Length: 216
Image 1 (cartoon, rainbow, N blue to C red):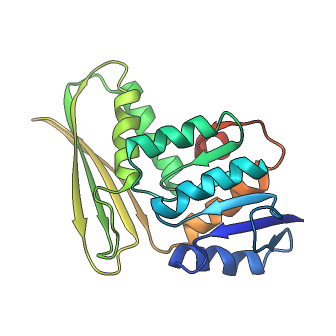
Image 2: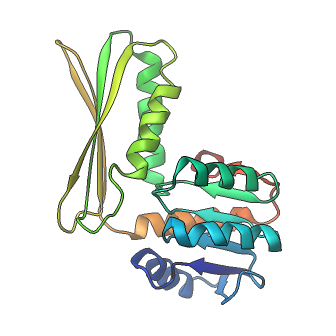
């Protein structure tokens, strides 16, 4: 059995993860970092950063799904990964993983100059804009733009009631519009991803990990 400490347990994502874990005999929820095998964080940066230090102190693997970090905070997280395994992802759904795989294949095959627009839509209670996933997608596209056919990457953000998350990536020029879209219909997909990753976090070496290290 794997013991889990959830930071942000009172939040919507924390409650979703907790409810799923209660039905999973492979896990047990614990109340402190020190007694856990893996720590899962879906909270706010001001709560995450002290947790990073606590996980470091007790040498606990850490899964971070929180968004809205500053560059300085991200640097601290990266430096801490030299001592403990940290899985940082702003979207842990398997759907986004396959979404990115298809975009990567398009970038590999494309031979036309194009611009790119990332459109993201979330519920009105989401604090950060653009979303962490949109920022991650922009970096992903720029990193995989090896042939330099994508001449620009822009992000457009919308906030609408009761939308869990829609991300659409469109590559376009005067002749073509090619779009890739992912829509989250429930928070459960993010919670499922975090729980799946938690099963593989125990016993791994320190370092920074992404969903690509766990989803195939």
